[in-house]
Amino acid sequence: AQSVAQPEDQVNVAEGNPLTVKCTYSVSGNPYLFWYVQYPNRGLQFLLKYITGDNLVKGSYGFEAEFNKSQTSFHLKKPSALVSDSALYFCAVRTNYGGSQGNLIFGKGTKLSVKP
Amino acid sequence: DTGVSQDPRHKITKRGQNVTFRCDPISEHNRLYWYRQTLGQGPEFLTYFQNEAQLEKSRLLSDRFSAERPKGSFSTLEIQRTEQGDSAMYLCASSRTSGGARSTDTQYFGPGTRLTVL
Image (cartoon, rainbow over the protein chains, first blue to last red):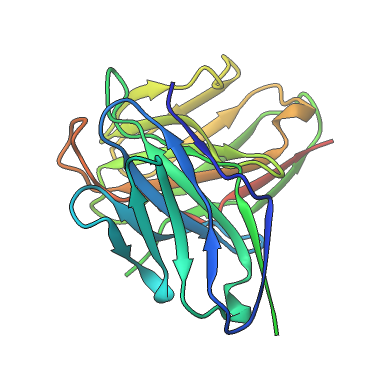
């Protein structure tokens, strides 16, 4: 079965410091991986995705993620955090085998808190 | 560029009542997905359409739930005889895909409909 794990419920970072939000996955075949951000009472906003190619993926708002096949990880990173980055972050893997064609399986989410 | 819209944004109902939610996808997006999100959890897949065809339904989608996309544009999700356990945020997403398991399209989400069943 395909799954996504976000081991940290919450990450606290000081403004200006680098941030990392962790994600590990379990899939059959090649993974299609996504990061979304959710602000309070809002839907999910797409940040970036990994399909194939370069292991370092750059996305919106200065975020990037590193795909590591040997560690089955897809951690989200940003060199310098902003207070406005405070939100809920979701990692997701896309189903891509068998009879299922495309729904996303999400992790439980990680709450990022950036303090001034 | 109009994003995915959902209506209503909030719905409060009494147990046993029927409710219907609407989703309008991004124009020309041929796939439309429904997810459910409960507090402290990530979204869980319910069902999806490619054009007007409902191609997959999750086991989470009990027989009280029904979804339609009659003309391949907007979609409705109906819950009959609501239960308190149905209280959740219902999210709609859409994407434009060339089809098949190798498709790499990105799903764009609407703001959600928050359902509270009393």
